[in-house]
Every structure is written in structure tokens, then in C-alpha cells.
Length: 404
Image (cartoon, rainbow, N blue to C red; front, side, top):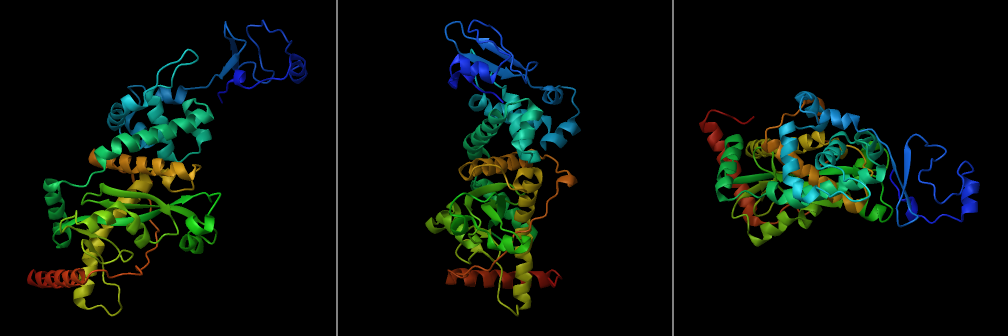
């Protein structure tokens, strides 16, 4: 822990002597030893002020070992969920924003150590106490450092790495989705997942109380939501972060930038495929939800599930790679969007750079799906879905498939 003794006014010297009898109240003393930390604490006195600062010696051995050029690549990948090359790439991207200058009082934590501590925290999900010990940092310094780096990733890198495809890239995306499902003009697969959190101090039931997870876990559960649209390779092209876990998928969708873009007509006849929790509307394609489906409708639902699987697998890799998303996090509610946004950006960087996913990191999603209350919002979308379903069955039979 780092602290500024000079900023905390002591009582008079007599009282101070009573608290620390081993230390004689000599104001000219250049070095003092705390009775319990004589081997770890150094005291320095400013030549102009009677202010005493101390800094606790901490071991950097583990990080210094990891940062050596000859440190095994597979061990680095296991620790930070990415290769050394990708780690160095992220450091270069964040250099101008994250690097701090040395001061007269102490040297700044180096850039690579800052980024490494943040990524380790996100990857391991370890509490800040353990992260600070591993990287030789004070607890408060570690906490602030992780949030600062996450904020930089979200602010600086999100606009670069979470992008809606341009016209040329959208053509490639629609071709890949059509090759997978047979449905044309699909530009994305949308899904909403829940991130567990510690119960907030206020508005618990009204805003953050997750009844569905509570029923399953048999204890009160609280969560944040993350809605994401992914392209055909599982890379996020749009995210909506931070609405309460009590919100349904439909409610989160209505609050999202994606919904606003659809209403404005920005998607230009491109379908985004969702599950039964989303409404059927222009540019949003969802499965049939009524009972007694026809063969045509059943075949269509199977193809929708194939597209949805890409989004689910992407979120499973997101949570698997960044273990902090699997457990209740010790972060304030207002800071959570920084953490979640940084994880989504790092997911995209790893996917774009073909970082391998260790099977040991696999994570199984357990989000519940609820049929949207206002499930049909466009007569034209109803007709378009029926046409797609009939076309799929017709082409399937022509190719010798029954879809069943």
C-alpha cells in the first residue's frame, strides 16, 4: 500500500511518542523505522518541508520473469490469454494514452506493466489484492491502474475494433451467412448475455434484480446486460452495455443504438437475426414461436438457430477468455461499462489476430430466453419471413434435403 504520511496531520509529538514509543520525537531524524515494518519501509524527508513519505518495497519478480524475451510463449499465452505479439500490439496502440511520466517522488509504473496487470485481472478474474501482489503494486494503485487501462481501451480502441461493416465488408459477411444458412442479406447475429454483479447499494429490486437467475440459482442474483451483434466470424460489430439484468432482451434492444439505427433505416434491408426474445420487425429476423409448427417453419427455425449459434459461441469465447465476466466483480456499478467494453474490444483483437482458444477456457452460456411480449411489429416482416421459409424449403428439396 502506498500512502502519503505527510498528507495526514499527526497529533503533537508527545502523542506521537506515545503511539510509537520506540521512536524518539526528533524532527531532524533522516530515517525512521516503523516498529512493525523496519525491513520494508523507508522514510525520506523533503529538504524544504517537514513531510515524510514512505514507499513499501514490493516484489516484481513474477512480472519481470514474464517480460523476459526468453519467457516461453505458451506460458505467456496461458497467463494472458494472448500471444506476446498481440500483447505488444496492444501496448503500442495504448502507448500515448496510458504511459505516465515519472515524478520527483517516484517512478511511474511502466506501460507494459500497466497493460499486463489489467489484462491479467480481466483474464484471471483474480481479486485486486492478488493482482497487486503478483505485479508488485499497491492495492489502490492496482485498482486505479486497471480502470485507467480499461477506460483507455474502451475510449481509444473501441472505435477502431468494433465497427459496423462497410459496404464491401458487408457483402462478404452476407455471403458467409448465406453459405451457412441459405438465408440471404443477413449481416449479423444478435444476442444478449448477463454479467453477474454484487448487489448494488440502491434500487436493487427496481433496476438490478434478476428474477430468472435467482430462481435457477436459488439465491438472489444481480446482473448487467451486454447485447452484441456479431458478424459471420464471431467478431462484434455493435455492442450495448450496462442495462439492468431485470430487463428482458426486448427491453435492452429498445434501448440500444441498433434499434435506433433500424428505426432510422440505416441498415438498408440487411437482416440481423435474433432469438425469440427479440421482436419480428423490419431488419430483425426471429424464429417462429407458436405451437404446432409446419415443416416449413421448423426448417426455418433450424437455420435461424445456426446463425444464432455464431453469436452464442462468440459470447462463450468472450466469457471463457476473460474470466472476470464469469463471477461477481468487485467494481462499482458506474465503472462496469469500462470493464465490459474493454473485454469486448480485446475479444475482437484476439479474434482478428487468430489467437487460439484453449479448451480449458471453454465456458457454457446459461442465459434464459423469453418470448418477446410485443413479438410482431411489422406486417411486411411477417410476409418476408414466410417467403424466406418457403424459399428455404423449396431449395432444400431441390437439392435433395428435407431439413428434418
